[in-house]
Length: 335
Ligand code: UT7
Image (cartoon, rainbow, N blue to C red; front, top):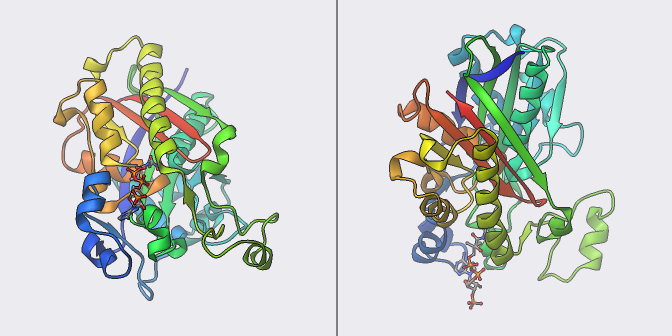
């Protein structure tokens, strides 16, 4: 029986910082509103001419993860790429990353699970490694939100929240007993698919049709979020799926050394921290600097926590996410 572990982590964010005050110059919002409701102080946006795209940022994060894992790109047997903001409608960005990194003709699998995308992707990697099929899998989450947000007052309830960036992990076969990914837990509830959604362009809603058919105050080629419903579901599902992971491994919340919640809203993370009675040292947040980077948020946070020496060998690390779909997920790991 094989197990898998994260052997290397990397992240990349564009250099261009967009503060809350910058946003308040282009839409009716304020630093106070954004910080009070979300905890976000600034986020990164791709800037025209900086050369970044979803796939390019993903590849930059991946290079760092590979180097830290001491795994050659030639040893990667599968790429799994999670994003909701691909550079192209099809093919998925996994093949772009394979090409940018000049990798062999390994399979590139695309995962479409929004904020839960990284944990879904990690879970797939874990299964392939557990069966013995692969020894090294590259898992990447990358998002270019700024390319598709409504940066006017009309879109403010969504556009102030999201930021750009990428994170990556090399997942490798583990040789140490009890180390690595102990379990992953995935869920979805499609009844709420349209509560956090980008309706088009899609084959059903192509651009001319959606422009013609929709009033200007409800444009379906910008993301829509029913914020209050998402918030309510998020706090419930985060707690459920963390508990599910702990129970599956006969652990309790006091065993958690580091919880990395998907960075959706600092208030959600704080609610979960209080619910599980975790100290500030047991939870990592960086939404203040990056906003919500969807599929990239967990690998970016995990990388920063590791870089800051907040995760050490033997630690119990729990990842948890909730987002569009709705989808939610957790992963329990012994570092
Ligand atoms: O990663 C995926 C998961 N996503 C989440 O978990 C997000 C969950 N939801 C949330 O975090 C919160 O619902 C938000 C932060 C998005 C919004 O907070 P809220 O307390 O639910 O605010 P609201 O949407 O009910 O808006 C309250 C007021 C409204 O004005 P009125 O109707 O009270 O006059 C909005 O028009 O705030 C207004 N508003 C804004 N004001 C300034 C909405 N967006 C903004 C803004 N700046 N950016």
